[in-house]
Amino acid sequence: LLIWGGKVRIISSHNGVSNPFNELIKEAEAGKNGFNFHTFTFGDAVKNGLFKRVCLIKGEEWSQEKEDAWEAKIRSAYGTRTSKMKQELDAIPAESEGAALTRVLIERCMSTDLPPVVRWDRPDEFKNLDDFERTEQADEFCEGLLKPLLDRLDKDREHSFGEDFARSGDKTAIVVFEIGADLIRRARLIVELKNIPFDQQRDILFYIGDALPRLIGGALDARGNGQYLAEKARQRWGECIHEVMTSAKWYAANMPGYIEAFGDKSLLLPNDADVLADHQALAYVNGIIKVPDEHSTKGADGYDRHGDTAPAGALAWFASNQEAIAYEYETNRKPNNPMQGHNGGPPMHDDDRRGGTVNVYLRGSL
Image 1 (cartoon, rainbow, N blue to C red):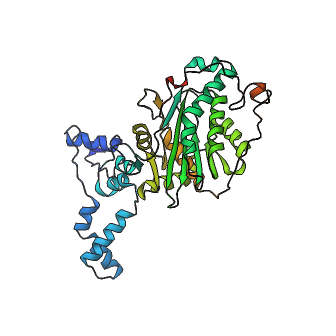
Image 2 (cartoon, one colour):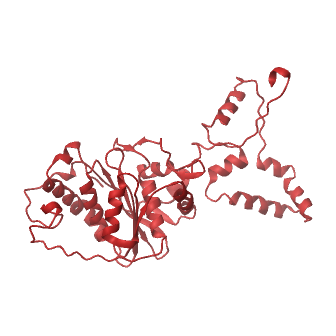
Image 3 (cartoon, rainbow, N blue to C red):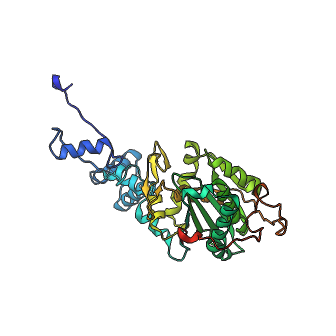
């Protein structure tokens, strides 16, 4: 086209700082490609009479007050998606491509009044211990770190939970929301598990779920390895459990509500750098909000993360908004029954055979 004297004009809005369009702009500004760069924002159009033209076409009288209200309405239509608004209206690329939440929005929904995140990890050798030893260590983790927090839960309030499962690569994250009288979802417990075998993850989830007052719902990622635990949870707590096959359709239907909750501050999370980074990872990917598949970061403990608490929080939010099916649990276990447990072995809380203290706190922390 250029050979025959033609011209190339590229007209577009932004889609992140790393988008090819923004790279082309940077090259033009640096004088590397011979293009001229022109910017026309929504604000420029308004100043040049866009709303006056709207009034003329609609046969309405223009006023500055009406123009200001109209511009505010256009901008407010983006809701909490301020990065998207700035890209499309103000020609300002988002810090990361398609970011769904800003750091400011997330930090506004964090509170030092909420309990810190509970983290537990085990070395690879842990999976090779016998059933009794693994169960003992998981039991002591639950009794030592989880029970004090679970005992403090308000017995009069409804609770929901969400879990994003991982076996070894990333972390399993469990988020427990208390639904307050003001309808704000407060994360009264967040648990992260690293390199924990399937059986112990099941036992820990059961320990948490059984202790939740007025459990109205739980949602678990049922893809891949997570399907096992989602099925076990459904078998234990019944219809209030949602086995979620996260898909583009599910993200499209449910993630906007979770993002909107940060805008109106209808949820609260603990003040935690990794939880903050997880939610900063949420982005628009092919029109839906999710943690990009290729996303990976290092947490404060040095372990790999894939936005772990963000999908768990979204699942807990989803569960809290489903039709409430209150579940109450009463155990029928008998402590003195030697045959209770996994394959005849010792279950959690049901066997007094303890061969001394196990150092589970080596890498467990609040």
